[in-house]
Image 1 (cartoon, rainbow, N blue to C red):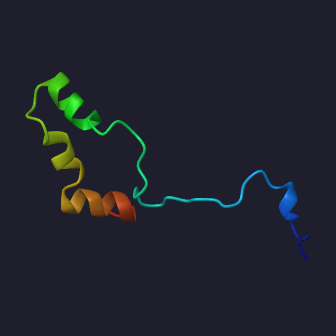
Image 2 (image 1 turned 120 degrees about the vertical axis):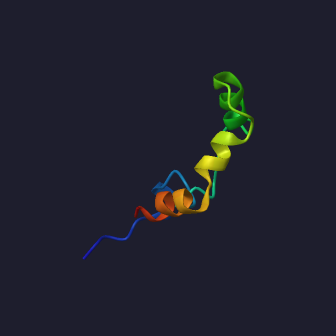
Length: 63
Protein backbone atom coordinates (compact mmCIF):
# COMPACT_ATOMS: atom_id res chain seq x y z
CA UNK A 1 0.00 0.00 0.00
CA UNK A 2 1.36 3.42 -0.98
CA UNK A 3 2.15 5.91 1.71
CA UNK A 4 0.04 9.08 1.61
CA UNK A 5 1.90 12.15 0.38
CA UNK A 6 1.91 15.06 2.76
CA UNK A 7 0.72 18.15 0.86
CA UNK A 8 3.14 20.53 2.56
CA UNK A 9 6.10 18.60 1.11
CA UNK A 10 5.09 19.18 -2.52
CA UNK A 11 6.51 22.21 -4.37
CA UNK A 12 3.31 22.59 -6.44
CA UNK A 13 -0.46 22.50 -6.09
CA UNK A 14 -1.35 20.81 -9.36
CA UNK A 15 0.10 19.18 -12.45
CA UNK A 16 -0.99 20.12 -15.96
CA UNK A 17 -0.60 17.48 -18.67
CA UNK A 18 -1.11 18.49 -22.28
CA UNK A 19 -1.57 15.35 -24.36
CA UNK A 20 -2.79 16.84 -27.62
CA UNK A 21 -1.24 20.26 -28.07
CA UNK A 22 -4.06 22.38 -26.64
CA UNK A 23 -1.67 24.31 -24.43
CA UNK A 24 0.88 26.00 -26.65
CA UNK A 25 3.63 28.31 -25.55
CA UNK A 26 5.72 29.75 -28.30
CA UNK A 27 6.13 32.50 -30.80
CA UNK A 28 2.68 33.15 -32.33
CA UNK A 29 4.42 34.25 -35.53
CA UNK A 30 6.84 31.31 -35.57
CA UNK A 31 5.33 29.37 -38.46
CA UNK A 32 4.86 32.46 -40.59
CA UNK A 33 8.46 33.48 -39.85
CA UNK A 34 9.63 30.09 -41.12
CA UNK A 35 7.52 30.52 -44.24
CA UNK A 36 9.07 33.95 -44.84
CA UNK A 37 12.58 32.61 -44.26
CA UNK A 38 12.24 29.67 -46.63
CA UNK A 39 10.06 31.19 -49.34
CA UNK A 40 6.57 29.69 -49.38
CA UNK A 41 3.55 31.91 -48.89
CA UNK A 42 2.70 32.73 -45.28
CA UNK A 43 0.36 30.13 -43.87
CA UNK A 44 1.78 27.24 -45.92
CA UNK A 45 3.49 25.50 -42.98
CA UNK A 46 0.52 25.98 -40.64
CA UNK A 47 -1.87 24.83 -43.34
CA UNK A 48 0.07 21.63 -43.89
CA UNK A 49 0.66 21.02 -40.17
CA UNK A 50 -2.96 21.42 -39.15
CA UNK A 51 -4.57 19.81 -42.19
CA UNK A 52 -7.24 17.35 -41.02
CA UNK A 53 -5.56 13.99 -41.68
CA UNK A 54 -2.09 15.17 -40.61
CA UNK A 55 -3.43 16.64 -37.40
CA UNK A 56 -5.50 13.53 -36.63
CA UNK A 57 -2.45 11.31 -37.12
CA UNK A 58 -0.31 13.51 -34.87
CA UNK A 59 -2.93 13.65 -32.10
CA UNK A 60 -3.90 9.98 -32.18
CA UNK A 61 -0.51 8.52 -33.09
CA UNK A 62 -2.07 6.57 -35.95
CA UNK A 63 -1.35 7.03 -39.65
